[in-house]
Image (cartoon, one colour):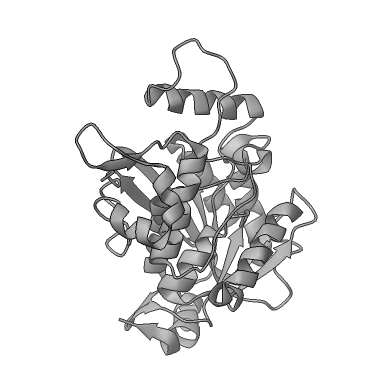
Length: 320
């Protein structure tokens, strides 16, 4: 069986190796992509976009109670174990004396929900939270709408909102008087289309699938529309804009958060948070095999207000 990166959060459902017999039982279409490895166990070609999509379908049907999952061609097909890790570490920020706050009264904003709705799917199944998924791409939101139609548990806890202004992250989405316990975001990684293509070539070279010096446009095993992969200023510019814009909604959200893939971006973002007046800044490291990632979470709420928030919004629905 193919290995899953070690070091995942203890509540992550994807520890150890992929259980291919289980995955094939719940999603027979995966069989077309499963093959024996040189060691004699089962694996698949992770550089093949169709194989990655089929694996995701099987994981979501086999572990998260979905009846159907699909995305349009070319949209981001994210690695589920890593996405689950971000969400489980975020859940640790919602600790009370009785455990993690659970249930539909906990409201989470997914900035850039995409066509895959991975975070709402995982969050609904594992914690019962309610989600608002925002995106600038009407096609992505239409795809999520189709997922909602065939998955009643997702439909009951996910509302989609279109962001008409690509420069805005919270305005036009968070409504007056509306409260969120968390926001989360997987920001565009690259600063340009060329940088995104170069990054994919590096990844495929590491897998031995592209020779050094080859410049042909690579196929993205994880897919992705341009707004999912790159934006002017890259990851740093995007997250700095998020920090600046979060100030206007300081009293309406307990925890803002964003993945930070590049270590060198942590310092500038931390400095921006301090200038913005964030009162609580958390850096959470995540390990997935040899890969290291992290996210930053921040709150503008004074300690006393945080305490009251936990008492009135989280304690009534907390469970061990």
